[in-house]
Image (cartoon, rainbow over all chains, first blue to last red; front, side):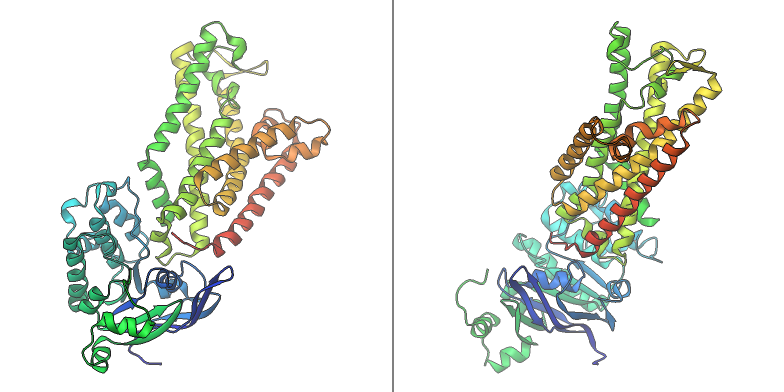
Length: 246
Length: 261
């Protein structure tokens, strides 16, 4: 096994009823990657993330994170992961700080000042004592990232992290991801349907279409091979589609 | 233990708990008010003194406790799956069985809290309305103050077992349901149907005894007199069976439940 491999899925398959949502998915995320998981809405991105984080169970296949198999070693596997799946959900009647305090309570050996540390990283200290129900979507996303950072994970999985944000909010989240990856050596796995965003911050991409991974490569390698085409054009070439990705 | 701490922290931070407690107090005040207004036939109060009040009114709040349990359990289980807050816990190194155990413990703690509060609130309301009194009277028997307090404690302590058994059934319904309203409605319907069945004399009495509604109403009564060993043994077995069977069923559902929020 490649020692640089942090997340790997092997022939991951999932159906709901008769409909196969994920079909023999083989992902490879290397340590230090900011990996963009690309696909139109409804192609299986969120389902794949739910499978990778153990929120739903595969029909077949395996998820391996940092050498641990999710199926038979859930606790050790998930200890290496921080994630926002679908949208950041918190207890609205509690403050951001209290929400993190509850989660910190579940992490063995966590430092007392870790909550302040992660709030500082996502620049949310000034509103930490306010109830989450008063937060904007962007603030909830940042709180979600703070929650994902709590256990100092090797891998952070973000499902459409800029969805619904205004341009300023999108910019802030993207900057935060790049900064955390560089400064804290965290690997990111980000799903998105925003090609330009992925091109800006990701070094590797995987393209999923109808539950099947069509391509997985370095962004640079892809653009070089296609003689300077944008990631958007490459995406449409690969999927055989045209038009708006969203 | 940490999970239970979290559940209790959330419980005390929600407004629902305080609304439930307020409703229980208002109910007690209303019962006392009816009695004082000369309509004592509408109440279960036998003797107007504070020390007799909690034991006389112990069945009065069962319907409310059942609904509150349904709402609370729907809140900590079904709603967490629906709103996605369950992901906060499930994305930590926490097994699903551990999570279920914490919900079960939280339900039990909630039941204990409501019952303790109910006894205390009833004593206080009775004290203000009638004064403490010289003795406890229950079902026409007079007890000394000490014996009366002991009997009240025994009866309320005994009532926890069927309440927890009923709570376990609610947990199963909550784990299998997709929204809170379904859980509360099913819980209430179970209760009403149970009450109806327990009143049907065509059903053999031993079967009626096994109904959870019967257990909720009558289990603690077996502890008032000393000659109910068979009923107590049967009821303990019945309640523990409810807890065990519905715990195992919930575990099966819980372990396979997809988090799609």
